[in-house]
Length: 536
Image (cartoon, rainbow, N blue to C red; front, side, top):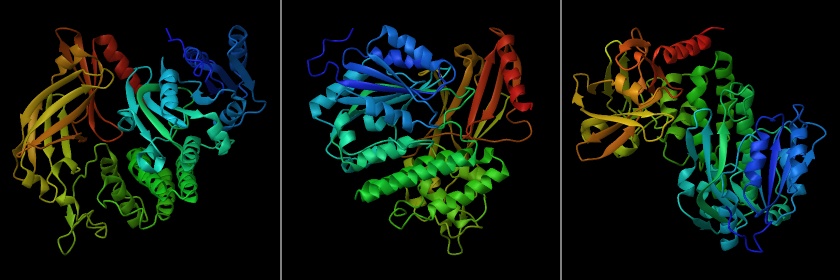
């Protein structure tokens, strides 16, 4: 039940829902918007010239729901910007928000945003978006630190972290504010249009309210026949589109005199966009890698000294320095580990002729002189994980890092197996770290396969919590070693399930994970899916 709205709140919001050929999901999106209660004056559903019956479905819904208006575009626009602009032009309420046809608004989202907007007189009010992986239902919050508690920001320049939240859909906008400043989405086919729209919003210096409430559920369907733009990153044109959107956002803020926000856009590119694509680079073919490398070097060459004034050993900055120093793709496995979250700087740990730490003997100009001085909690520590399924034994090796690890004094490692899709399902065991003759630290522990299978089949991620002599701790992931006898599936008899199958594998970021199946049918499904990925 929704509380009776005040006269000012009743009918205060227009929700613009856009879609193209999404008859399977658009009704759920529209119903989630209508279900927000009396604060929603109207839902403007803009159909981008669908051919799958979406428009007809919307018309049938509108016949029974007076708050639903349907607008049909005569020609497909090729992107999200034109239908959103069409909906914005049609919006009749004082506030407007946007919803994609394959997502939903959780109950109470509009009320939470509207209450904060009214109370704080904010032109823009944002709330927490969660990415929901389907079909597993696993949820990951988007920029959770930004929405950890209620806040009012007089102008975006006071909270540069706002540029990291490039989504347009988790926010409520004063309609007159958008129209007065001519803020619109790029029309036509313009991938990553949200980045440009959001930059235009921040350039207009609105008063911003932030609420910790969940206000948007972003559905991620990686197995869908047609991937969304954000998921379909297999072609280098996707990367070109992303860098173009980042460049455009930077120019918008710079032209508006918001130099701090413009610099924050480039910092966000290094810390988020660049790291995400570098993690996937080893999975691409040689032609993609060369095109991606050349384009990225050209893009990074636009950065000036102020953009590079941060910590030169920060993961994104270090990735950029290696790229600029090398005309050809190189060190891809090592770069992937550095781009991971948390980042890992894997060996070799080279030094220049004057003993300055550097990236490698081949790139001595990429120096790491600030790295050994960092506190242990900020070091990109590298831990290798060796798992031989036959022996059911996990071996760990913590590498030195220019003497910093030895000075910190490793004591032990808490080994944590965390189920990927079931929050709170964790198995932990603490094992001592012992110094080895080669200057590393090692540990070994059995893998509790039966226990994992009894708790839940599916993917289990490995996380390590390292503890040091002074009590400091560091949470890291473990790099999965490959080679003969490693990362092979292993089936064993089980007193509870008849059969348990474990398949160790390396994630896209290079970390070790397990996929556990229990029982003959579950194991058969796992092996069949694996064969389908192997076979053309």
